[in-house]
Image 1: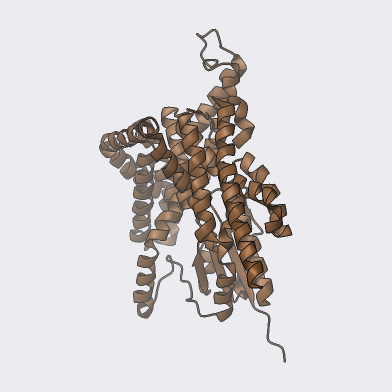
Image 2 (image 1 turned 90 degrees about the vertical axis):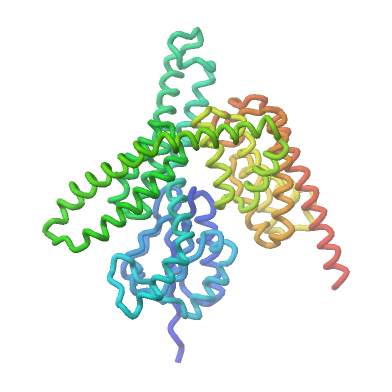
Length: 474
C-alpha cells in the first residue's frame, strides 16, 4: 500500500522582487521534486503576489515553508507547522528546507492575534524573543522594497531631464525647457514620497493597516524637518510598535465599535502621538542625520580607497541581500538628500562587477565550466549591464568560501576606481542604460571592466586549478 505523497506550500519574497524571489521558487520546486513531494509556491515579487495560495491548499499542506525577507500575511497559516527562513536560504539551502519539511517535526505556528493557551505561552514568548532581530530586519526590508519603485522612477526621470541641461528645469535659465521641467517636477515628486512610503511600510509590517497611516505621517514629518531616512526609520518603528500596543489594549472593544475604532480612533491617536513625537524629537534626529550624511559624503574625498573597499565588499558579500541593500539604500539616501551622484556611482559599479566576473570567467575559461554554467555565464553580461547582481549567486552558492572573496575583491577594485575617476551617476538604477547621463561615462565603463576582468581571470584560474586537480585524482 503506497503512502500519500507529501504536499507543501511555500512563500518566497525578497525586498526588490527581481531575482531572489524566483530563484528561491525554482530551488524549492527542484528540491521537492527530488524528495518525491509536491509543492505550491507563492511569490512576492516586484509586481506583487503571484500564484497566491488558496485556503484549500493551505489546509491540505503538511508543511508551510516561508522563505521571505518581506512581510507576509501570516494569519492564514495559523495552526499549520511552519519553517521560517530567509529568501537567501530558499536559494542556497532549498534541499535542507525540504528535508526538514519531509521530517515533519516543526512547531505549529500560532498567529499572534489569536489567544495563546497558558500552557503554550512560554514557548511562544521564547520564539518571539528569538525572532525579534529577524522581525526588525523584515520590517526594514518591507519599507525598502516598497520605497524602491519611487526611488527608481523619480531618479531616472530627474536624470533624463538633465539631457536638456543641468538647469533645464529653471525658468530663469537659458537652458530652460518645458518638457525637461515637467520631467524634473515628476521626478522630484516621486523622490519626495520615498521616506513617507519607506516609513509607512515599516509600520505596516509591524501593526498592519493601523500602523500605515501613523507611519506615513511620521515619514512626511521626517522629510519636512530634515530628519531623512534616519528619522524615517525611527518614526516607522515607533509608529508600528505604538499602534501594535494600541491594538492590544483595545482588543476587548465590542464588535459594534470596530468601525469607530478602525476608521476614527486608531488613525486619530496614531497621527497625534507619532506626529507629536517627531515634532519634539525631530531637531535632534535631523542633526544626527545631517552629521551622518556629511561623514559618508566626506569619505569619498578623504579616503576613496577605504570607501571603495567597504562599498565593494558590502555589495558583493550577499549579492542583493541585506548587506548589499544597506550599501544601496545609503547611496540612494545620499542621492536623494544631497544630490550626491558620486557615492551612487560607486554603489552601482560594485553591484555590476560580480555578474561580469562570472561572465568573463565562463567565456575566457570556457572548458572549465559545465554547459549549464556556460549558458548562465553569458546571461550575466546582460544582468551586469542592467545592474542586477543576483546573476552571480548560483556560482557563489556552489563554492562561497572561495568565490565570494573573489567577487568582493573585484567589486572593490571597480568601486575604488569609480571614486578615483570622480564618476557621477545621477540615477539610482538602470546600469548602462543611463550611460549617456553619467559624468565621465567612459571612465565608468573602464572601472567596471577593470573589476570584472580582474575577477574573471582570478576566478577562471581557480576553476582551472580545481579542474586539473580533480583530473589528477581520477
